[in-house]
Image 1 (cartoon, rainbow, N blue to C red):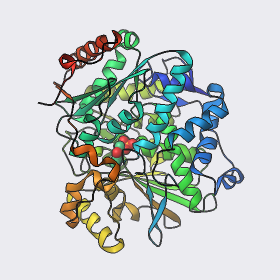
Image 2 (image 1 turned 45 degrees about the horizontal axis):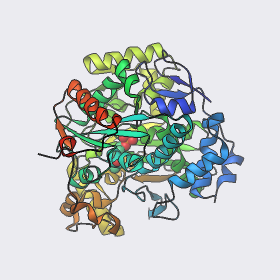
Image 3 (image 1 turned 180 degrees about the vertical axis):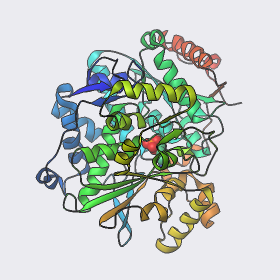
Length: 480
Ligand SMILES: *Cc1c(COP(=O)(O)O)cnc(C)c1O
């Protein structure tokens, strides 16, 4: 399978090269040249198979000759070996026609593990094969950071630099990143928003001499391998609820548009998906887009669901590429305009086409609290504030009645104890294996919102590592 950049000016690459490259050199995102299609018969054959077997079948056509089948199997098995539920991604019934897809059974308790555990193994394999090193750069609104650090810690071929917005993640999210003590892990708290963090990651990846010198790559969902790994749980859940012989619809709490874009890929592969509800919190740029066709940024404000406090949804560019019939020049024009003036608009026919599949919905903080409370009273399930967005009644009412409704449960409630306590007076405990978090010292460096400051920090840290000095007191930083 060949991959093209959404901006049309970067080299066409194979899967393995796309994984190592992350963001395309022209600033675009890589997409497969076409989507493999499965017949209903093929879907039926996958029913009842293990998560790992489904993952293998779904991923294989996208990977082609880049990885030998037996190696791919091993990578998949290793990636999901330390998940704490036999089914990996179990489906739970909440109401007659409402199901929860639980995606918090990985090591850091959010759905990010489903892709990043796999990506970590993939990096290790591809770099080992080539005898190369990589410097991973990431931005996180909370959950990507811990999942990526967990996936890359102690891997000799990788240094990882993770930017999070200072004081904007939950305490547990922060501790999951900053208590990891590994010489190759570098946490940066930026005095800025998540969007600023992501903009710096893109700026440094766009600085081609810096990028080449330190072999920079990305773990954000701009990396195609993450999207691919996420397609698997949509397929797995749909099959377990009767697809392809029943229509399914998903409600997805959305920030960077990576998760819901994976559902779109599943649909392109022939999975019968009726509709995708894109749930946003008060940072509602996507909801406004699907209403008006205009993407317009507004300042981000902190909410009860911090992992969705985003205004620039990177993966939307992949959808736009298809919506514009893969016209890279049109996509480039829209994205450059968006960068310059903070907005672009699609024509009515494009919006109409997108609205055949997608609908947006905004859920304010007080509704989130109410949904957590009502769900608990009705079902005894404790859902986290992001899952609550996906369970909002008005979002579900927008899904076709003749389809099975599935809400994505993207994080474990124990990651957001304050919001849960406000709603139902209970603080869900962390699972035993994470109870050490509160005893460990934290390590992170606070930097100003300035690409040069981040660049200087990376260079300084890497000089230390490239000289293979173990970190000493001088180059260990801690919170102020
Ligand atoms: C990352 C995250 C989201 C947003 O997912 P995107 O792929 O960025 O749209 C929503 N909820 C939780 C819990 C997350 O960690």
